[in-house]
Length: 170
Image (cartoon, rainbow, N blue to C red; front, side, top):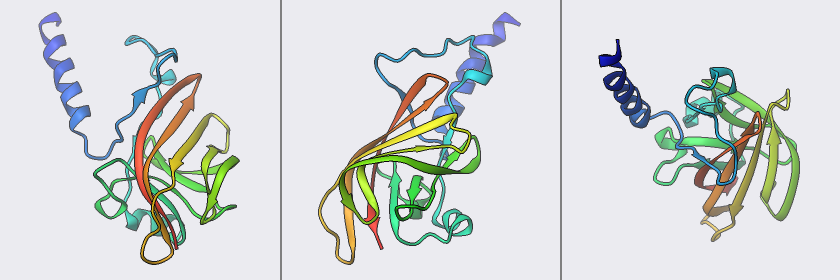
């Protein structure tokens, strides 16, 4: 059995790195990280990507802020976060389920029902999502570019981050 452990581990790693529907999450410096032998129950939630069709089926889409990993977009199936207007829930694909998140805090510059620093949580408050974005140039029609940002996801005391870009508007 020992002879297969390394090749199987390498295959698993290659599969995870090549998976097109998962966001690249990085541990945050200074945060404790789970060991390789940690129980699966304490693993960070898996963040997936979703398409415009997924979004419209879940909420109808519309005005709001869409964030994707750099080089991807909602229309290429690369969205990792969507938040409609101020009091509407946000959406993220966590562990294969499109989860609704409630905004719990907001500060910074306001634009299209968003702010540059917002915090969201799952209904059970087990996962918190902090979204920090930089407001960019105005677009052609009621939109603003988000040239850079980060999503900080905290679950069971561990924080991971995802670099994002996107836009907001109607």
